[in-house]
Length: 348
Image 1 (cartoon, rainbow, N blue to C red):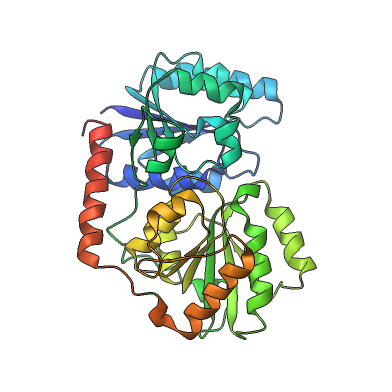
Image 2 (cartoon, helix red, strand yellow; image 1 turned 135 degrees about the horizontal axis):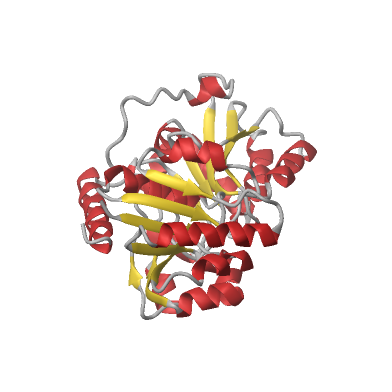
């Protein structure tokens, strides 16, 4: 059985990891993921979460030189057993990744939800990977038209077959009351995700809705900063952190609204999955969000200020008819088309 090699910047790249995990569950191929770093020590939890069809590796040393050596050895082992390689968001790759990439003769690149800074300044390694790519796939038409004209649009892969065996009880796990209104922000804890704004929005809404709670689900370098900011805002009872190594579709199902304040330029996996589940989405006016969401049909577009997003959430709570939802039949047809595109990518 053939193997597919995935190269990611780190074990915190949740948007890419969830798509690889979703595809591996349905794929006939074995998948090997090499993350260039594991700064947040996610490796063991991530291995359990990715499932048996995915083999995950990452350097374990804090030394950049030893990391490069470990990646070189991983490259020698993985390349010969893999027939197909994909680099995810290469603008985030560190210099240590060159030890791995130098052994590959060809690869494709997938660009998901980069920040505008990454698009403008991809860095030395990112430029090398993009120039050496046999083909570039992007998550949105905006990325194709504005940055990668020779690319192919590959929409984020969402889960259509929801697991009935999932035992996750979100409110019980976080000790929330049964009548709590749950606002979810899901993604990488990074500056361009603008999750500080989600916390600030909760500071407004707590005065209007006594049972409202915010869940920040993700991983990344800014978790400590976000926790400190929550405490400075005196919002510890209202703002909760959840590790993403759960059934994220079930997390979305048990939420009342998805809040996306990010300024990235591609389509967000969480937005696509929320639309699939007919969950209200309140999102910023970023290019990818506006491409995914039709205001008051399959979501609500607000901002760019956090106050504008807070107003939309408040209006959605007091008047749920603002969000009309989408037709499930159209959603199913769209989802099957996504699966077909991904299957063609790997020749399955």
